[in-house]
Length: 91
Image (cartoon, rainbow, N blue to C red):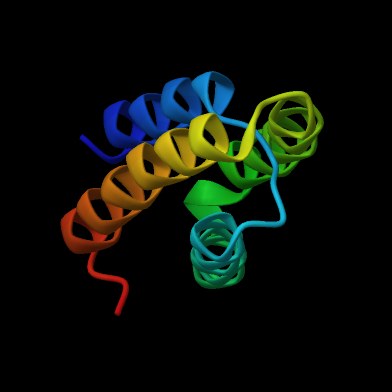
């Protein structure tokens, strides 16, 4: 179940991108917190490494979008993070 949720998060990340908007700052802060917490679990380390790589690519993609599109992608990412955190008991 955790792997499926992580895969869903990665999918949402690839559809999103990086921005300097407040919403995207919040999204990336949430993602950083998730990565730190998930890194504490040995069974999640491979997925966390993959998530870190995907996050870098996501930020590059977001830079090319207009602020409204950035916010839409980051809002989607925040919703996915909230679900993932709840599913695996983070926060």
